[in-house]
Image (cartoon, rainbow, N blue to C red; front, side, top):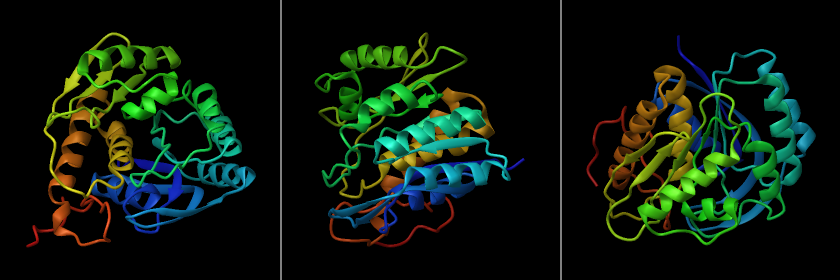
Length: 274
């Protein structure tokens, strides 16, 4: 059965991040993608120039209308922007209880622009973290969630992963996917931790400016794969492999003048000349 997946996130008109990137990723990995718009942005590959909030009650209406009709097998949560939206998303997902909830705590765009109200961080930590079945922070985001300086070694990442896992609900299998892309050097080691196992996912940095939306893409890939694989470590390995290939082939695209998008459609499209 083809899984139905949902992204609750913001709109990036350039298509490199947000719900447009999520839908492309989900479809590329064999899932049917649906979306709830949680925020609107004026954005390109260089900057976020404006953010238009979506009323929390309308976000709740989108979620309830969709779930009342469509079987949703996995949810990915990305940019929410506001305290009110964060609370209603937590409330409605607690009501509908999807089997998989992948939480990508989006706080800052690749351009450096802030995408989450500072006052919403507490709401994310207190209301959404206990619902998540898989949390996917990078090192700066982990630092914000734990109110500490971001770490810069794999040894310290292990300690951070353990602390993040303790913030999550202990009912059932819950995982932290701590991304090591901000580590110094050429290695990009990620950690996958469920409170018991600590699994390293090794990688090597690819030299490119086309890294816009990598976090969105990874979390969407996980949401697409979890209902199909039903094994978190294997889904994580496949999601990371998909993202690495998408980054490696990003040079085939010519989108914008800043941090360009990864190549979401690389499984479908023949290799193009640069």
